[in-house]
Picture 1: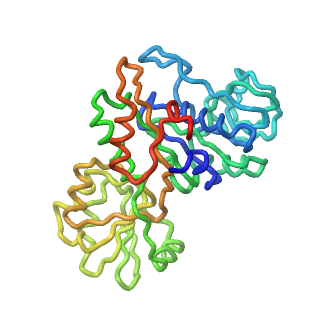
Picture 2: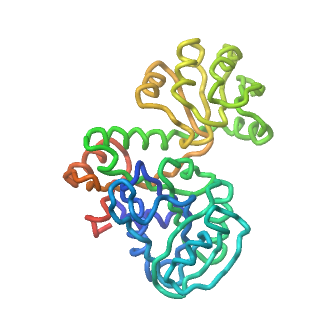
Picture 3: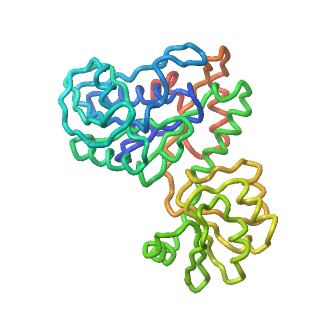
Length: 342
């Protein structure tokens, strides 16, 4: 198995997202920063502001982010005021947040920093590009809990998923939920060039139908969430694809499965795996009954990190948690607190 840092260097930008609070997301970020020290110049930012210095539920202190000299950071103005690094201001982005404008700095010393970036995905892409242009070898983006859209390949090139005991006191449930999330994020990419070219010319849609001759028709729906009836009423034996811009939910799948058999001969296309908000039960029913879902862009899931310790007073056997998840997915699983070799 490749070392974690070695895998990261295959991508220009990496998002770190968590299944829940206290699963080790900041610990993973600090691990990478430490391993890269003296070898690579890093750029750091965050989607919004993920949490407080002290967990409000458990009362435990959250890990701080310690950076080295010559690190590029994009964070809110108020965060810079509480930082203890000596810094050089590189750019004022004009992007406003509740904690002030996003400022890009270069650290002139080692020290602690707080990250609070923009909460809009489009801004995040711009920030990543700026950090790279200013001299970062690799950009790390600290994701927020319940914001898995941050893993979208339109924002970062690769993604690390963090999971752990805080998700549940039942180790089997942690494994179940983690594996399901990995499967959703890893949805296969559609490789039909004709379809991709067609969609480049047709961008203003929520749901569109593409027939076998590549004729295209946009459905007059406001969102994909309530579109199952419109989809069922408009597909026929000539329909090749149903392309959905937005979220796929249990309700959408249930509405399609319960109303027609034509879905079995059609491929449903989403933007990427971050748009899948479906339970394992409904997703399995859809797949087993003959349904197919593919993505316009694949998410490069680099690996999974696990935290076997919960702040709620219990912990799992670290080797068992790692082994159970590794046995269910085709990705490397790391425990960065235990596996120094990584």
